Length: 314
Length: 314
Image (tube, rainbow over all chains, first blue to last red; front, side, top):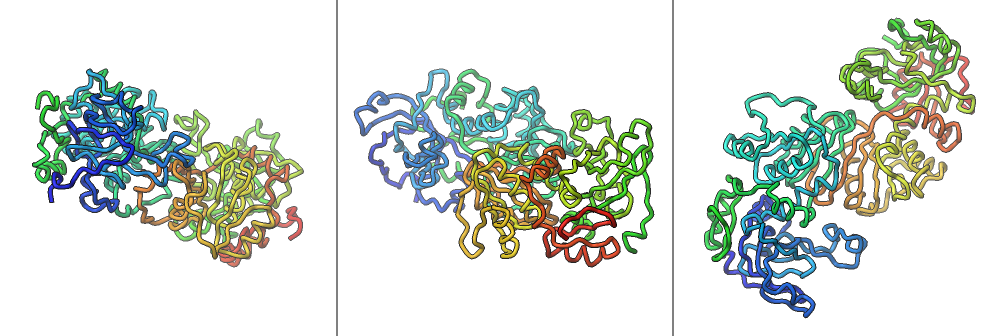
């Protein structure tokens, strides 16, 4: 079965979006390995144009280029009523849980989840709104201003998180193990740690682990100072063997971090404070999804681009 | 070798304290099993009377009944200069690291670490100042007011933490597995969870794990709500196998918590907001330390009481 073979399943009350481009994320690769027991169409980073609406009130979205928040809550629980639908127990999540995703020509989503995309954000940048929003979530959770910050992981998410932290922290150091990706980090103006040098122990106020591996958390805990903060930004499946006593003795805070604010992400991309061009390794057609997903395991960002999408420089 | 056989080793510049009573804590039991590679006299919960001083300025402490903060910093590093000597890299810690402890007749400590004990706090209560201060640390780290709070662990530290949380939170539920200790929790006016009933999933805003076991952390993570806080209050040695992805998906904060403010602890004990009488299982003489330490592995609080100490009701 290819992604094209799954028929479009519109959801009652939603708008229908014609996808222009969609990015492959680590979570998609995990889902294809069985995580979350999700059997629908994956893909939750996208930009598209609204093609049809269910409700007359939503007609203003018709023809607009949009990105979309990925959590759809029940609308009734305490989380939904307090504006945190991403923690609704009954939520569906685009391409992750109970709702088809964006690796398709058409996508169904409630109008309430949509954000219009300004002209300053082209399709290539718009694909990154969802992960940049997730990176911006860190700024909502902790005070980064003036702190010594490190990012463990030099992949696509690491290079976004580092750029977002740099909007508040004077210098941000990326720890990775891929010379090629660290070179791109430096091209983005980020500091990098020499993979051949020993890690500076307890040198950072804030360390964000975006490796999605157990050893990333270990490394982050060794890099953070006493009373510092480690942010867990990527999911890792399987058990990590963790010594917890240093967390107690050093009074470290370990904070899980997931989805974030789309308006902040659109602002950072429109103003160029977050740059995505060097992160795009390849644009693939939907028909090539097997090769594209395989390449996404090794490369930075691989994007599905539909005919007519504005994906400059590729 | 018995504890009595270790000669008193006064430290230059310190005051000398004649110990009146000292409590056995889980950390002491771990130290005796090899934790922290500490080979001196253990014991860090104590009350005593200042018997000698090194500096004329410290003469005002002579003859006073005191408790003492256990961390002694270098006095020069950024942590010491900011008043957080408990994170000084070169610190010594009474009975834990580089400095003899209180399971002895005499104890050496800098005068700067001392707090006078008011008459309203008898020797039995004063022994609990250090662990109650550690419990009060949670109130410095997170806002407990009006939150649904749970404590996992029904041991001596759990029953102190629960009482301290109750000074700010309307109701606090203790989760344990010892009927006898849970009965004492109820005598203290605390809520308890029936060990035979299933745990309510994600029911608490704040969960403090004081079990000192890997499964305590697992249980705490299952009890806390999305965006809630789990406080790790006791050290556990050895690796815990931990699934970290629920921390990310639920955006849980996991916060290590160690030493706390002595003045707050003295206030809570003096006012009776924290009650210790039901927690004391036995008072032992120093000569009986082997039996006492063994009993401390099963019972709530076991205290070494010196001749003349004021330990009512025992």
